[in-house]
Amino acid sequence: MTTESLPESIMSHVSVGTNNFPRAKAFYDAVLGTLGVGVVMEHPGAAAYGRAFPEFWLQVPHDGGKAVVGNGSHFGFLATSKAQVDAFYAKAVEMGGQGDGAPGPREHYGPQYYGAFVRDLDGHKIEAMFWDVAVG
Image (cartoon, rainbow, N blue to C red; front, side, top):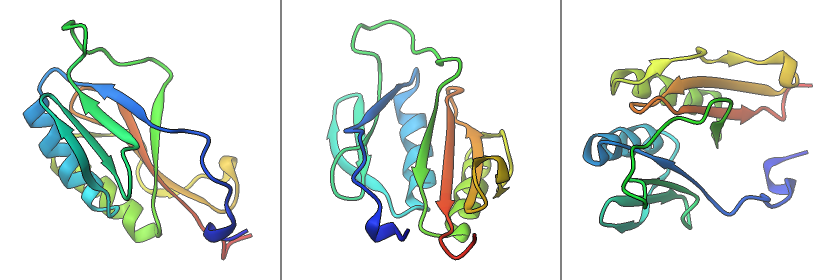
């Protein structure tokens, strides 16, 4: 299976909350930039990231309450190479994120899986992953 033959995603978008929008936006601008992802839409207190359309939203909570981390949830971003996964991880740690799984193969997800996990500035678990069709 090649990237071109993968089925369309079942997801439209996901959103994460932040308690410090300017700081979190600077983090995601830099980190997602390593994957060729940028802001495609913006509103006061909210930014949508994607390659072509809004897929990942960063925002202050609409209800005005405090943003909290969802235990057991994480958000995976598709990389186009192992080098992008490595760059994602390095940039996230450089920007103040906490490493939560250094870049490398994740055989338990399949021999083609290469990923890295980070906690963002608000504690959300994020990941970059590459599905290496040359392996397996």
